[in-house]
Image 1 (tube, rainbow, N blue to C red):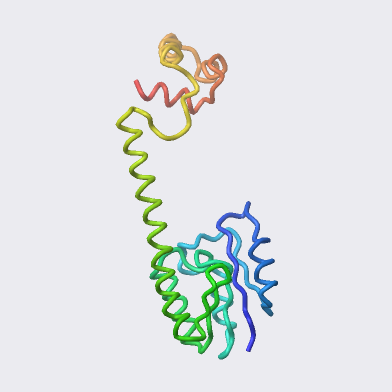
Image 2 (cartoon, rainbow, N blue to C red; image 1 turned 30 degrees about the vertical axis):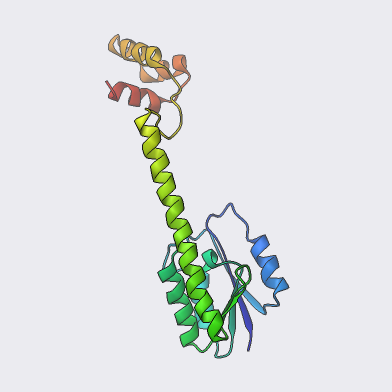
Amino acid sequence: MARIGYARVSTVDQDADLQLAALEAAGVDKIFTDHGVSGTKASRPQLDEMLNYLRPGDTVVIWKFDRLGRNTRNLLDLVETIENKDCNFESITEQIDTSGPMGKAMLTIMSAFAQLERDQIAERTKAGLAAAAKNNRLGGRPRKADAQAVADARKWKAEGMSVKKIAGYLEVSRATVYRYLQDA
């Protein structure tokens, strides 16, 4: 009966040190770590390897719910897969252990709340973007040149100046000049 840890970071720039330290402190025997893999992916190389590695009586230990699954259904499906292998599941942060009936019930409740929180964040983000659009504020990077610079670019291009030279005068990339010319 081994304690098997799983850690995941979404981008290659992130590191899993915090998760790994927590898993080691929880006494795991072996850790599988996915680097640069989104939690929305159904198949993750190290997760798949961990699931194949499990033996009856093992306990899968994670740092936090969202490291294993990004939504309630995905998380519950993975925990069901773990339990079908006669293994238990434990989350350090949420303090959930499915070795008993109360842990299983709490897992379902906690994962539903985690999903609700993600859905609310997405809803607030959409509402904020819609409100900003009503006030003529769009997301993204601000334009590097003002309307006068765009007009100059169009005039210079009409006069036969090269895009490279226009880009140099405006201190923007050639792609930006092409975008200005296309918006005409």
